[in-house]
Image (cartoon, rainbow, N blue to C red; front, side):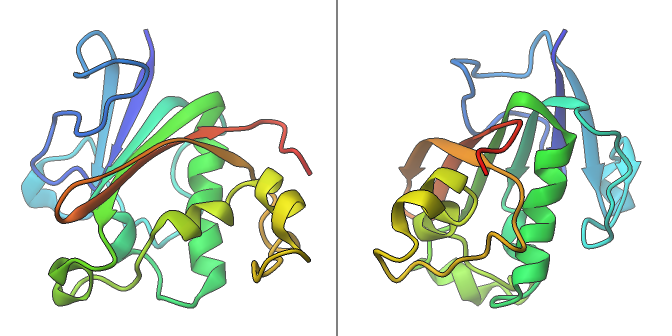
Length: 176
């Protein structure tokens, strides 16, 4: 049975992004995590505190719906890469991250007082060692390889009126 982590679950217990054709969590072991006890998660935790309380390679999938924009601060590379390093660490090789965040041009991106960063398609390039190889020195892409040792391969992106949705595959070992 595959193991799934639903980060910042709130009261949600359903899948918002399909992974591998799965449209529900049926037949999977789902672990829920949230900072708010009112949502009755399996684990109470502040995701700004690292390391997260999971062993390496613990999950086949991590789902983060309307959560990543609440972690860290825009322009803080340490918190940005720290969050994705934790996701990479707890995913098994070939594991998937499925996420939704407000679109950069949605009124919700900065309208919600709890949002502290915007994540868009360009943000995902900084999580792929292959994109560093292809772009550094050829495009305006900054080189954060001294900070980011993980590696994700974007496998799908999509948009709704208000959201940017994506899935990433954990590449282990990283293509450094």
